[in-house]
Image (cartoon, rainbow, N blue to C red; front, top):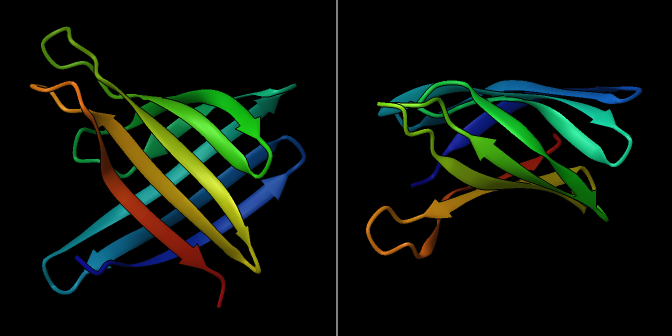
Amino acid sequence: MHVSCTLDSRADGEEISMQGACRANVVFSRRIGADLQAQGARYTGSYVGSIRGPATLSGSRNGGTLDLRIRWPARNDTGRTARMQVASLGSGRMRLVTSESHPRSGERIVTARIEFSRK
């Protein structure tokens, strides 16, 4: 599905903030965003963009990619985790990919792949 997003980002010292919204035709519109704080080589923060609600983020940087663990809000005392990679592609572009284990097979599947470019 083709999705169009607008995103404002700000980096201030050891803090990164991205806030915006994504739209798919007239089908849906959803607010997205992430706030991260760097503490040495580690990053922690929060993510908004899933119907599951706000999630916590933690991870580290590997070159131009942030490799983060997402912890979704618990439902029935079973919080789920996923992976988010935020990669700088150069020339004002970045890619956000989320993936998680399929609940039945355990196979890792990509649940979202969004590429942003600065206009």
